[in-house]
Structure formats: C-alpha cells, structure tokens
Amino acid sequence: MLRFVLTLSASLLLVLGTNPASADPELHRQMVAEPESLDPQKVSGQPEAVVLEDLFEGLLAASATGEPLPGAASSWDTTADGLVWTFHLRTDGKWSDGDPLTAEDFVYSLRREVDPATASPYSAALSPIAGADEIVAGHAPPASLGVAAVDAQTLKITLARPTPWLLALLAHHAMYPVPRKAIEAFGDKWTRPGNMVSNGPYAMAGWVPHGEITIARNPNFHDAAAVKIAIVHHILADDPTAAFRRYAAGELDNVTIPGREVDKAKIDYPDQLHLNPVLSTTFLAIDLNRGEFADVRIRRALSMVLDRDTLVKRVLKGAQLPAVGLIPPGGIPGYEPPQPDWAGQPLPARIETARQLMAAARGVDAPPLRLTVRTVKSEQAELIVSAIVSMWKSALGIDATLDTSEWSVLEQDLHHDNYQLAFYGWAADYVDPWTYLANYRSDAAQLNISNYRNPSYDALLDQSRQAADSNARMKLLEQAEAMLLSDQILIPIDFGVTQTLVNPHLAGWSASPINMHPSRYLSWTD
Image 1 (cartoon, rainbow, N blue to C red):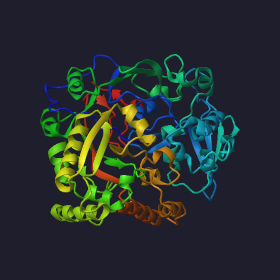
Image 2 (cartoon, rainbow, N blue to C red):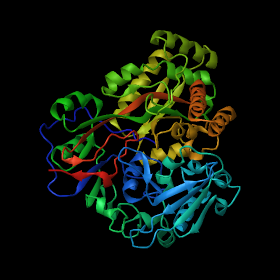
Image 3 (tube, one colour):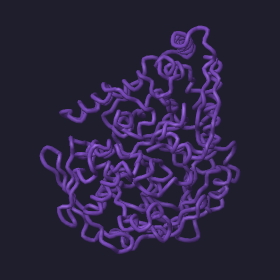
Image 4 (cartoon, one colour):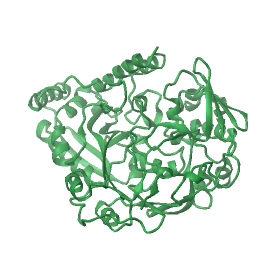
C-alpha cells in the first residue's frame, strides 16, 4: 500500500513519566491522516487500511504478525495445477446488520473491484483471477471474472495463472466484501455512520470528519467473543507534539515518534517503545511521462548524488536504514535484493559520475534543471526533501522547490499523473516481492504511479509465475528489481523501522512485517 510519511516535530518527549493505563475498556488509536474514504475498493493508503482492517474481513484474515489465516472462509482447497480454488464460507458469517454473508457477496464485490466504473486504484491486484485483465482494460464485462458462487457458502475462484501469493492477497482490503444493499441504497455515502454495513470484528459507530472515527464491537462477527476491546476510537493526531501530549495524558494509546527521539525514549519509556523493521520503503517517485525525465542518465544522476547516510543519521536521526534499492533486505525469506552498480562507490566518485551523466544528457551549457517535489504537509518530509534539494543544488546545480498538500490531495494527484517528483513510499501488503514489483507492470493501472512501461520487465514477472520452484521464482524477481534499478524509475531513500510508543497495559501489539496491528487482537492488562 502507499505509505504515508509521518509528521514530525523538533521535540516530542516533552513530558516524562509512565503512560497511564486507560481508565475504561476503550482503545484510543492514533490516526495519522484523515482517510480519503472507507470504501475498501477506492483507497490504497495505510491510514485507510488501519481502519478498514477493523471493519471488514476477507476470505482470509491477517494474524497479529501478518500471516494469512482463515477469515470469512473457514477452509479451502485447490486443484493440482493451482488454478481453481474453492473457499468454504463459515455458516455463521454475517454482516453487521445481521444479514447472512454469502458467496454471492464476494462475487459482487470482486466484480465491483475490477469494474472500470469503480476506478479502484487496486484493480490490477486482481490480475491473477481469470478475466480480470480484460475487464480492467475495458475489453470485457465484469460478469466474465473467474468467480462463481457454487452455493450460499461456497465460492469458486478460477485463476489465469498460478499465484503463490494468493492466500496473502485474499486478506488485503481490496478483496474485502462490500455490502451491495447499502451501496445501492446510499451510493457514495454508504460508508457514513448509519449507512455503513461491514462484516469485520467492529462496526461503524461514528465519524467526525478531521476528528475521529469510532467503531464498536460487532456482535454479529463470527469470533466476537474473542474481541476483547468493545470500543475503538481512531483519532486524527497528525501534529506530533499534540499527539505525544495526548499520549502522555492517557488520551492516546499509541503514537509514532521521530527517530531523533528514539534514544531518549529508550531511557524514559523502555517498556513502551517498539522498534521493529518492516517491509516499507520511502522514495522519490518519478513521473516518467514527463519529458525532463525521459533520459535515464538524468534520473540516475539525481539518485547517485544523494548522501543517504547523512539523510538517515542527521535528518531522520533514527533507526531507519539507507536504501538504494526498492525491497528491504532480510524481510522476505529466500529473496536477495539487488543493488545498483554504483552503490559501493564513495560519494565523491558518484557525484563526479553524476555530473558527467547530466552533462551528457542535457548538454554542458544547458540551463539549470527546474524540479518540483510534491509531498504531504509534514515536518519530516520537508526536512528530508530540503536536504535532498540542497544536495542536488550543490552537486548538480539543480533548482528544486517543495510543494506540500494534504494526504488525500497528494494521493489523488499521484494516481492521476499530476506531479513531477513526489516524496512517497510503499508499505508491503504481504510478505512477498510481488507486492512491490507488480506495481510497475505495464498493466498495473493506478498502482503504477511512475508510468513505467517495459515489456522485458513484464516478461520477467510473467516467467516468475511459471517458475518450477520458489528459488527459481525468487531469482527471476531479483532480476526484475535489478531492471527497475537499472532504469532508475524511482529514487530510494530509506527502509522502514517502526518507532512507536504503545501503552504498556495494552497487550497484543506484536511485531508485524507489514506494520498492521488489528484491534481484534489487542486487550487490556492490569
């Protein structure tokens, strides 16, 4: 999913002491941005996903540590070739209004996801399902999608090709069922309080725009007895100073802190600080449709001159790791991320090579390259981009400016090619290289924010689908990432590490490689 870059401040740890336990059974979670929508099929960002995973459940669900497990489906089986999957829904599955959850609900929802009229940013994620590519391209009707309700509790999904990551994908919010009755009754307003119907551990109770979203335990959820916290408040807290004060006062039960405060937090909050590597990468996205980026030498020069060690140590000042590639190392078993051929060179040599590349691409006497970098309104983003702009100016004479906007505005602009460069990132949806690499296929639609088109790259991904074993598949995917880096379709900056303070009386906040912490697994302790 698209990663939201958190707002930071100069000093968060203003109040020392022990974060008090909540006086009631309710949970108050930090929400770092106002959700663009709570329609699972119309969003692609992590701020939305955190709320949606509480409200909905797919055929599979994610465990507290991110592994797929039975969700709305209690079991499944597949044919020997792995192309036909049959999912057996729970007999006690219900919507929050008490109506039964059926296989037809999933047929409707998956067809809606690929329907061009829905304009889902994740429609390309359904590419493994037979007919999906043709439907997304507008060449076939949604009814031709390879999904069918055998009976009320049995769903059959026919794939176009083997898909090793299918089960993990089925836990993703793009695969959640959505309520046809509510959508047809209320249209785009079906997600509002009083209208929303969902099938997850919680149901919508209230939504104050730019304030908070309140959800309540769904008594019709099949595992409601295991959901310990009755009320959850997702509270907008995008100003870090105010957010920390609310955390210290017991008004918030989790808060993300900037890297420069980590050392102090280790001393003052040792039982509350969670530092966990995650599959998350921050980068500068590049719109390759822009003429100024047509020459790969220009893109490569922009990346080569960045001093990532300085960005991480002096600007981020935290646990993040410098990145010159797309996929974090060590996070995906069997996968060895490649690096660009210049990665091991000292910075002065890289700068000299970058100047030569820029001169060869633009001419020795060309006027300074003028660039605009888009980002969310965020102190961290502004600090990092300002440092990057300074490095570009010093090394290459580039004149770059920063343009900030709200999260929802930036997300829309990225999906509709309304940017030049953007400070952004990607957080893995599941533990597989495909969650990163599939975004840059020629047919990845809105997920391909770089507008990368390379038949050779597409062919490598297609070959990986047919690989004889996991090792062969990973090697092909490594080659694909190496091609992305050679073509320099983005400018990597850092790999993510969570820096979160969590109420010490809150149990179940587990290390997760996808950095998701469903409220259904959390509980209060004495």
